[in-house]
Length: 520
Image (cartoon, rainbow, N blue to C red; front, side, top):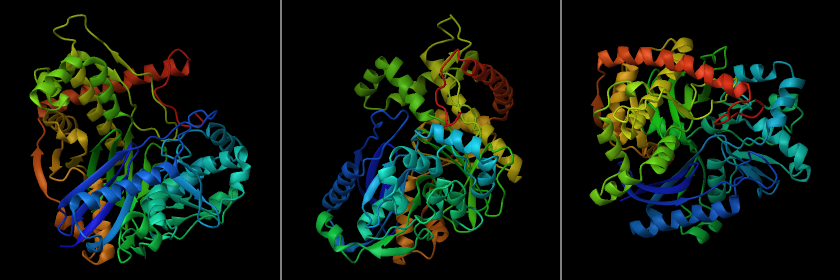
C-alpha cells in the first residue's frame, strides 16, 4: 500500500493526515497552537515559527508512528494553510518574522496608503481581488516603519503552507490560491504583480517563484528526513490555501459550483471564470482557485462557529452535562431543543457578523435584539435557533452579492465543515437559500484536497479535477421548504435594516464593534 501525507495548518491547530491513494483517511495527528499578540503591538497576531515547527514535526512523526507504516511508502506530501498568514526569510532562507491570518496591526499603514496614494486600494483591488484589510503590503510597511533592522534583511516572502514545504523540501516558492491573498498579485496572470510593491516603496525583489498546485518542487531533504523520519524519496508537492483545497475536497471544481464552509468563520465560495472582473463596489473578495483556469468569488461571515461556541459555553452548562451523560455532542441537544421553535425564532434578531463589505469591513456590537420576556418564547432553544438562522441569512446575502456581478444562478450548494453535522442547520440553510444542500461523506475536505494535490504530484491522479471527481462521495441531501423560504426572505430584509442601525451606534461611539479591519 502507498500513501499520501496532507499537512493542514489552520488558524487554531496543525494537523498531519495520512491517506491511502484511494482517498481513505488512515490516520490523523493534531496539535492546537496559538498566535500571540506581540508586546506593545495592538491587534497583532504573531506566528511563532520556532514553536510551531516543533508542533508540525510532532504531528508528522505521530501520524507515522500511529499508522505503523514504513515512511518510504509515503509517495508524496503537500500542505494547506490559513490564507493571509505570511513568513519572511533572510537571504539564507532562515525565518525572520511571521504573522497569522487576521493580524491587524497595520492600522496606521492602511490609513497612510489610502491617504497618500489616491485610489490605490481600488486600483490594486481590480487587479488582485483583495483589499488592504488583511493584505501583505500594509504589514510589510509596518515592518519597515517599526522593525527596520528586520526589514533590511528580508529577502523572500511566502505563505504559511509554503513555509512548511520549504522546511521539508528546502525550496521557497508560492502558488496562486494562497499567494493571491497577499494582494500583491494578478488574478489574470496568476502570479505576483511586483509593481504594486514598487509603487508604495516596498521591496520588489522578495517574491519567490510562483508555481501551480500539484507541482513537484523538491523531495524531502536529508535534514528533514533525519529530524522527522520521512524518506528522502518522498516528493514535496505544492499545496495551497485551505479554502481552495477544501473546495477540491468537496468536488467544487467547475464554473458555477458553490460551497459554504461552516467552520469558525463561514466562507461562501463560487467558482468563476479566471477573467471575471471583481465587483466595482469592492463588496466581495476574489481569489485564484487551485484549478488553474478558475478564480473564486468569496463571501466571509465572521465568527459564526465561534459565536456558537460562545453561546454554548456561556449559557448551556446543563446541556453540556446532559451531553456528557448521553455520550453525544452538546450541539446535538441544542438542535433537539430548537426543532420545536418556529421559523424566525419568535422574532429574535441576532447581531453578530455583517454581510461582507470588503471595502469597508467592520461589524456592529454583538447582541440579541427584540427579546421577549415570555420564557416560553425567548429561551436557549429560540436563541440558539436564531443564531443558526442568522448564519444562513448572512450567507444568502453574500451569495446574492456574488450572483449580482457573476450572473451565476445557484440551485445547489455543497455544505461542509463542523456546521454541516447538524441536521437542523442543514435544513435551515436549504430553506433560507432556496437551494438543494449536498453534504459530502468526507467533511474534512481541506485535508483530502491537500492529499489530492500530493497525489497529482506523485502521478497517482491525472490532475486535481480528475482526483476530485473520482474521490468525492455524497452522504445526504436537503431540499428547501418553499413556504419557509418566503418567510426567510422577509426576515432577511428586516435584519439588514436593523443591522444598519446597529452599525450607526458603532459609528457614533456608543457601542463597540465586534471586529474592524485595519484602517477603518
